Each structure stands twice: as structure tokens, then as C-alpha cells.
Length: 612
Image (spheres, rainbow, N blue to C red):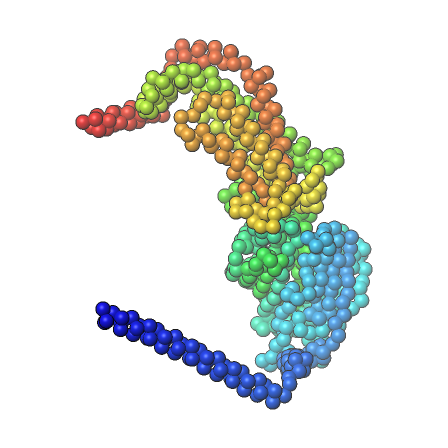
């Protein structure tokens, strides 16, 4: 017992020793840190104070000296004052700068950004157009670092505006950038003229650097990022890639144009004689920055040999308007997502049906909400024969319900036997159990085409209807201060209406068809409308409004067809008449019955074995 007490005392003393060791060690460390900080502060006090402005000035001076060294015979163009000049028409306002002879600010006059200011597709900072030129042996400099001599704004024959920027050295080598903006046009003509290009460009290669920062213009940046793409015309065809993360792409074949396309706007650079090759790098940005992507392109043009050379280029700064882009006859309208990937086929529905009807209706309709409603009516009338066949099939199934209920009670748990007899009843009555599904499936392409159309229709941007302030984006009657998974941070009233009317359609449809044995099939018609809450909540209100109107029309058609068009007594009499007709089995039906008979025998054998 005495040993146990001593052991306890020993453990206590040992613990106290450890605690004391850690305490004094930590105290010593704190004292040492305090002393070290005191010494550092003392040394810092002895050091001469550094002027941050002076450091910045020294850095700028060094950069300027480096530029002077690189400028060679273009040294007079390194130092200068920046001058801005504005070319504008009724659509676009472009501020040019003589530093690099390039656009500095591009504003679209007819479109507002999320901050209620004019949409800007080019802004100071990251955006740049430049290329290297040789200044002396083994020396080169970027044109973006040089100040060009600026000419006067000239009027063109069609009433447009033109300006030229000139850069020359003492030997006569030089460059001219000429920009022309025509009236009523988003396209800027840009001609680069070289004197002695062989001396200015290494191996006569013009390596154009084009930087374009894509910033948020819509209220829903998540959707805008999803719709942002890089499009290009290569090998006489359109191709694209969607931005989701940082991306690098090489262009090995000649390239007609390269486009950085947002949801409703795009900036496209065009080489009339093609870019010979190039590359593009896009960086990913967090949603909170307001920057969707920063694209850096390097595009090579082989300049023809000779004393002079002209490179004809164009830059499009404007909206993703199908008619405007198509008018340039460059295939640029393909940047608009009317159907891509596995759903590329729906773009033909949009081009040949939806868009012509939409454009026709908007000529006389008072609001875009009414245009969408009338478009919905047109589409529903067009697809009504499919709907009628679906309801007719449902009415036939309903007429067979009593007979199927008797079979169900007879076979009870024998699902194989019930399935075989059920097929016999359908065949004898001349009923296709899939007859109600196929017409509904044929309407799916129309839905996907409208999904693409309403997501890309710039005509709907900023257009209000009832409580929706922008038909191109979701309508929000309440915004939360947090995000609900699969739902979002707001409540869309049109989504609630679309979901509610879809639920009514399901309830009415279930009341008109035979009861399902599979519990999942029983509840599926109710699960799908609830899923629409999460799927539709962030979609354009134009689409959810269309879906609401379509559902209301469906409910009305269901009631009219079921109660006034379909004669249930006549259908029942026709089914009884069909049963009396001689039946011939197709090979598919024979194989199906053989499979069912084989499965039934296997099940019976299995049941007997389990009974033993």
C-alpha cells in the first residue's frame, strides 16, 4: 500500500516537473522573442526611411530606360503624352489612344450593364492589342509601348469616321494603323500598313497579341459564365469551346476569325486573309471578382514580302444579334447558342420555325410577354395532333381498366402471367400501350430548342413583363441572404406557376389512366413537377412564362378533348369490335411472347424449388 502511495506521489511530482519545464521554457521563449523584436525595432530605427513614392519612381525610370534601349531608332516614340480620340455612331462609342494606336474604351450605346452604365467591351487595364517590331539588330519593342502620331478624324463617303495613327523612324521604316467606323455598324475596319515590313518583322511574321477581359454584364454571373465561350472559324467551319476553368488551345490551321463570346455580347477579331496560326489562353476567375475570364490570344500572320504591305483586319464589338452577325456573311451568327453538343439538331428548329414566328409576332404584339404567349399558342396548335393521339391512347387504356383490374385480381402476385395476359388484351383490342408516350417524346426537341432560344435571345434582354423586370433572366419576388442547395438564393414566381400547373397536369393525367402497380411509376408524375423547382428557378423568366402558358393550354386541351371530342362509348365499342377481328402476330410479338413464356416457366421452376 505504501508503494502505491509513493508511486502516486512520484507521478504527481513528475507531472509538476513537466509543467514547470514547459512553463519556464515558454516564458524564456517569450522573453527571447521580446528581446529579438526590440533589437529588430532598434535596427529598423537606425535604418534610413525609404520613400515608397521614390521607389515607385525609380522603378518607372528603370522601365522607361529599358524601353529606350529597346526602342532603337524609334526612341522618340517611347516618350510622349497619351491622347484620346473618339469615333462614334448611333450604336457604339470607341475611344482610341495614340499609345499603341488601339481602342482603349468601347461602349455600346443601346445596352446597359448590371451597374446601369453602358456596356463596355473594352476598358483600360488588361485589354490590349499589340505586336513586336524590330528596332535595331537584336532589339525589339511592343507597339503597345510606343506613342504614334495621330491624324485628324476624317469623314468617309458613307458618312462614317476614320482616323490614322503613324509611327516612323529616321530611315523611313514605318507603320500606319487606320481605323474606320461606318454609320449604323458595330464593325470596325482596321488596316495595318507597313513600310519595309521585312526589316520591322522577324521573318515577315506579324505576331499579334490580343488581350480581352470579359466582365459581368448580367445579374446572374453563374449563368453568364456558363454561356461564355470561345468561338472561331477554322477550315471553313465553326468550332468552339466552353469556358469552365483555365484553358489553353492551339490553332494549327488557318483561322478566319476568333471570338470571345459572352451570353449577349461578343468581341471578334477578323483577318480578311486569315491568321496563319495562333493560340489562346483563358484564366478562370471567382464569381465575386465580376470577371468571367481573361483571354490572351497570340495570332500569327505571314506578311507578304515587298517594300510595303497592308494587313486588312476587322474587329466586331457588339451584341449577339443573329441578323446583325449574319449580315457580315462570315458565319459569325454561329457564336449564338441555338443548339450545341448533343442538342445541336434543335438549332434547325430555332432557325426555321421558332425565330421566324417570333420575329413575325413581335411586329404587332405590344409586349414581349404577349409575343411569348402567342408563340406558345402557335406551337401548341402545331403539336395538337400529337396531343390528341396521346389522349386518345389514354382513353383506350382507361376503357380497358375494368378488364385489367380483373386480370390483376386473378393473377395476384404472378407478375409474369399478368404481363402476358395484359399484352394479349392490348393486342386483341388493338391498343398500343406506348401510344401515349411517343407523342410526348416528340415534343422534347421543341422544349430544348426553346430552352436554347430563350437563353440566347438578346431581344428579351431588359424587357419587363408583369413582375419580371428582365425576361432574359430569372424573375425574383424574394431573395434570400443565403443559398439553398439545388434551389438557389431566390424565389421565382413564374417557376412556381410552371411547377403548380405541371402538378395539375400530372394529377389530371393520373385520374385518366389505369392505376400503376409499380410504386415508383405511381409517384413519378408528382416527383417531376417538384424537380422543376430546382431546375427552372434560375432559368430565364421568358422560358418559365412559356412553360406556364403551355401548361395552361394543356389543361384546357385535356378537358376539351376528354369531355367534348373523344367519345368514350364509341371507343369502347371499337375496342370490342377489334377483339372480334382475327389477329395476326408480327415476328416481334411472337418473340416477345416466347420470352415471356420462358420467363414464366423459369419463375415456376424457381418457385417449386423454393417450395421443396
